Image 1 (cartoon, chains in turn red, purple):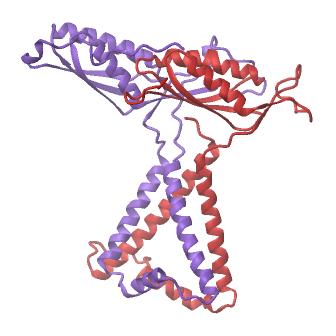
Image 2 (cartoon, chains in turn red, purple; image 1 turned 90 degrees about the vertical axis):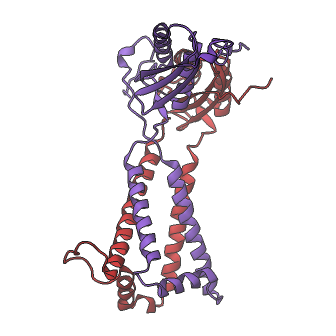
Image 3 (cartoon, helix red, strand yellow; image 1 turned 135 degrees about the vertical axis):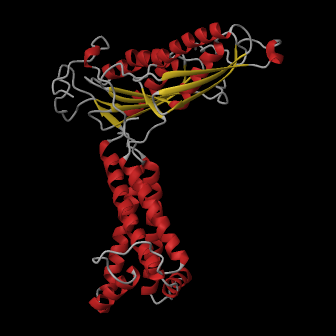
Length: 211
Length: 216
């Protein structure tokens, strides 16, 4: 399934940074503890900080006298609030791309990428995605389908999950999907391209369609 | 995407490139970490504000603080937790740097703007069904491991094993083609003969008979 580039790189960068931080902190504490026990099988290099990381951290904090300042509690509160907001934003970003309420249609006769005029015609997104889902479900070999149009009102992107019948032919379904519903939707929305990410899977024996 | 695109058609396959593997968004691990982090931040923030209003620190906070102050760095618990943290860090880095999405096999796209994937388990189920359609095969297990190879183990109950193998191979090749994958998996076949008891009373293709797609 195609994913939006931004979120993918944000997630991967943050995961890598957290991973490096966890690895460094874990190694530091473990090596310092084992060294203090005398169980470390190798000698530490000369630049390695002596003492336990926790002691180093608290000593340095005490030495700077930061906690005696009047603004210290406020700074702690601010940092915690900022951290909570950023983390909550990161969590919300995982809920998936938004669907615009309406799609902009190009004015009749205008080129597809012309700027929309104030009274440009629009199309309700759920109307188009509903029609697409119905058309996909009507294709032979398709049991059910879910369609979402994400990516913005001007350049929508179709995301589809298609559940096939047990004996279906995925290649034929993909071709029919492209020549049928996708092309139809592309014409309806007046687009040159309709970028689409399709996910096909076969219904498990347990899922039967009720009628 | 070109700046002046002409409407695309399925008749110009020259522009259709082989799809590269789509990188997974890693939403699950990101959501778990963000949830844990925001929960910890929220609890600390709540307690900090409560302390600002003159309430005593929450019990969990004083307990943790005391435990951290009392436990020496040489304690097995501390070292164990540190090792777990380091292993978790390595895992996060591996997750961040590898593409993932191994359970989704890219399909050959009908047009450049289309990206399609087929679930690996679904591909295996379709291949298994094709194997069971072959006369003489009564049981089959298919494993699509990695993204390049499918291993089929079939039980032959009757008929000449060589002939069954040839028919099965043909059937599986056709089924692989019908999957429409960008990189069709290579088939590795392993046949076992059913015990002599099973020679009678086995319907050739009862278990895997394909259901008719319904027209509505």
